[in-house]
Amino acid sequence: MRPSMTVTRAVRSMALSASFALPSVLWAGAPKPQAAPAHWVASWTASAMTVENKHTLEADSTVRNVVHLSVGGAAFRVILTNEYGVEPLVIGGASAALSAGADAILPANSHPLLFHGKPSLVIPAGAVMVSDPIEMSVKPFADVAISLFVPGQKLHTLTGHSISLTANFEAPGNQIDAPSLSQATKVRPWRFVRAVDVLAAADAATIVAFGDSISEGFSSAEGMNHRWPNRLAERLAARPETARFAVADEAISGNRVLHDDTGPAALRRFDADVLAVSGLKYLIILESINDIGHMTSHPESTERPVTAEDLINGLNQMIERAHAHGIRVYGATLTPFEGVHSYSASGEAIRQQINEFIRHGGRFDDVIDFDKLVADPSHPTRILPEWDKDHIHPNDAGYMKMGDAVELKLFR
Image (cartoon, rainbow, N blue to C red):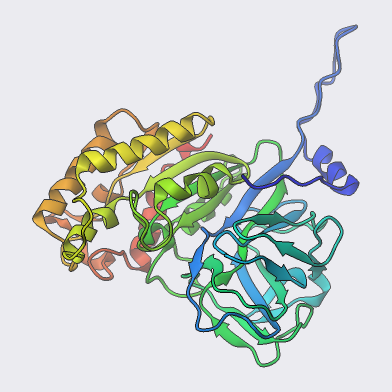
């Protein structure tokens, strides 16, 4: 589980100011009700995995990650990760600032990241570390640049998230406070960042989208935030009654439910990527298609062939574990995939069985029927041509339609 942080006196004051109003009349002798405090919710997350790199950061460097928040708050904190490192990770300094586009930041909005008041830290192998709160309000959909000075050290594995669909940057030396980076190189992954939590009102909560490339927004336009969870966040923010809900995208392209592949299996990463997310109240699961396709795309595999029963058991495990923590779980139906190399008639039969379980098995708290939305009515094993990118992933318009299709009444 992620460690908790002691909130500073100033942030406690903000928390009280964000609480519910007390009734104006109390009967004699009644105890005074306690105000409901503000609390931390995950405004942005990225599932941790081993990031492939051509080098091991043996020279001093600055890594500048750019992340896109969902909801705003009165303060924020950053969670750093070395979960898949095999050596301790030394961070020599860090800062967080509002992004000014590309590798630039707004210096007036730049703040040092401290850890128990200290500017540097060592993250043990396999661990995460939570920063002290930064007492600066952030708005919904702000782009935040998180700059990390990584002194030269030999690291055999780097933890991050491979497909960020945004531009991140690396530059030589310590440039964490630089308005723009000198000799910057654009890099694809987010490195060493796990989440940004914001201090939000007492009734704020987090929705986690848990899945594979279809929830990660694979092949959508870089820098446009056209993933379907982004679109869902935009719609929630547009309504006063749902504007308090954050959306955290915990998806990994190529991810499977039962086996490690691209990133750890869904069942293995469930605690870190779901249960440990700050403020979590709702979970949307869209996963299994890579388990199904693996049998066809990897005929040389020695794994036991997966069955619909195996995958349904895996989904049931996630439902049970989430319900034990009071989390409502929504099942998203698997979308069509005929036309890609991993398609087979036997795999399609398994997809149909899983969708039947999601729709009518009675285990999910509700259903989001993405299959019905994107399937071509004249050829329901294929995606509608106008929303089809590569026969398994929607295009940007298709992702937007998926985000539009989620019923907002599911989040109360």
